[in-house]
Length: 457
Image 1: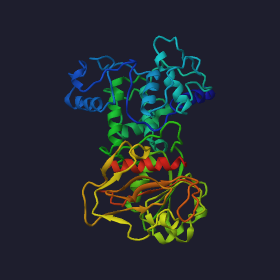
Image 2: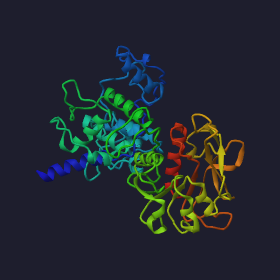
Image 3: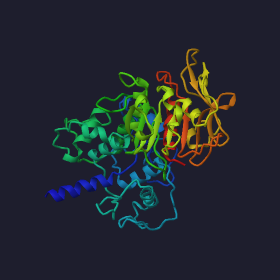
């Protein structure tokens, strides 16, 4: 019996091996009609206004489409084939529409119901987003329904709260299987899902499109900072967390050494950034600048140098032989390696925006032109910049001055103007620490730069 339970648990875990979740949806239809409003669907018009508002937000935002032109399909189940197409769209995977065979024995081009999903399922496997349904990875079970407890697990894992789930007090609900009790407890705590009218969660019942939409709305709100979270180690307000692009290194489980100020407690701005890193999937270790040495970096996948640390601890070439991708928000650190030609007074005062100079780059996150990174200009506030070398790749600068980089990086193998050879990708971000005034776009850019640096090009 123990062996059977263990096997079933493995199946469930394997079947939901996905990267952090973003929010979009596809349907079975090859030509999905454009939808602009909740009023286009006859089965949504009579919902309570607060619920209609949620659906309207999702539809107008391009998150959900209908099953038909005038039917959303509230009570329709979403199967694993549909999940594959959703994930393919979410993660912008390369879809090979010419495929006619699958590596899974139960995914076939002649399946009248799910053949459309074949290239999406293969794209998921190629990107490492799924290992299939069974323990051996031979089947995918495209027509299989998704239960409410599986949806809870999917959301919690997708948001990057796997470690929090392990600390959560399991629900005592007998409608939830043992393996899912922690996930359900956390999903309820975060208001991602709710119990049913009878007070039970109904873990084994099939999830409907309505359930998925409402859960997605709450999770999206949490991602974008409109909601708050509680509980040990969970991120607070987290605007717009990006997902890892297809084919690139995932942040999930990667270790970050976060170097910040020597203080009685971790500075508030450092706590906020560390929580963002955790939400991306990183495991974060904090170290104060006074105790930081090159030897302390061994075994980490990424180093984050906070703007709060005392720059004197970076002098003397402490980082020159470290071959680990590094993000600096302290511009002095770039200077000490020769990656910027200015040490002191590299700050732009009373600024509200930065200028994106490479809008096509992934780090730019689709932004272009002058982008507000603070809610308002403040003569008492400034943000950092660097004077880049010839081999730097520049994403953004101070408005009107392309010599002053606010977001830039050096790839592994490139050289600083002083001849220093870069051992691993090194990036700079302007973050000033004034977290109360930072915009969502600024956070989006920081998240994207961190993920880009991790790729270690």
